[in-house]
Length: 403
Image 1 (cartoon, rainbow, N blue to C red):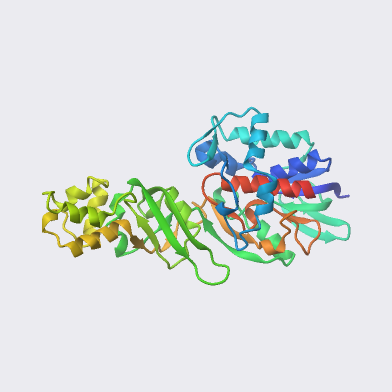
Image 2 (cartoon, rainbow, N blue to C red):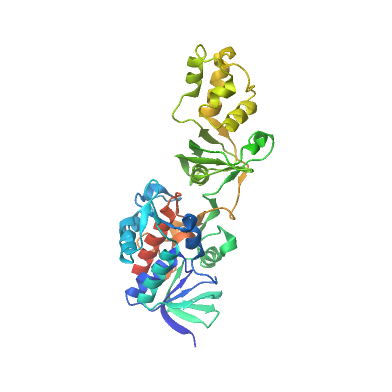
């Protein structure tokens, strides 16, 4: 005989535990299933082990989706302040680090323990580790074949996450379940991920690995229906052996379309061409020394060499037209990535279950009553900085309040 429940939540990450806790505390009989041996590994490693658990500025403008308005309802019904109230209830000390990003003072383990405690308060049943065999739609709900015994339930919530960081257990189970029930998928790809560059265009910059500086970065986005509009961020940039990383690049990677350039302003506070031209008559220095006043010395030399300038050339001897070219190379450096570091380094997965298939009020599939999708499985992706956790809490709360 299959075990009877009101709700089965598949995936015991941020969204899944939130949903299970909310539903169970409403009096629902809930079972939470996960294939992993260790609970909520993605929460554990987030924020350098301190979990950037939300952002006080979280709103629809901080999320990407083919339907940008879809997240509006959930985010308004469960806000960052609502999650903060839960954090305070469990007496977890926290601090704001940068641009509204909130972190635990101590450890991300505190957030995991908090969610586990909320589930225990509702007497959630756990199956972990537990592999799912199949899900079948019945007249009265669903039949799930799973390790430890079959389950029958009225509602199933899919909270299995995306494809990012496979070494901690990411799988495509959520997408396979969606396809089984004929739901459309927005093609997944890595998001919040370092970008890579190959070939001669990067040779001058490969030795700059380790250099970091604050920049402005932008991209035009894609063309045509369903493509993202361009992004623009001011954050720190990090040179790596294979390309570029740091918050600036992770942010812009979610907007970047393959084959298109990203544009970097390495000195956003300065019009470099005008500064160089106006300094020609008063500054008797070599060009490399002048740039090294404003940029890390190795970066200044690399930029000069890459753009055909001799670092030991005297500023006073340079034609204005050449200095304008150099200024453009620093204030408007357009470069086309050849790829990214992929899911192994991506913090999130872009795409997922098409939001047109779901109710924004409940997260239920419109054509499959009782089947819900939440969190990263859905085509809603936040910026770097706690926004994706806030989507997990909000979508989990909405589904948990509806099942």
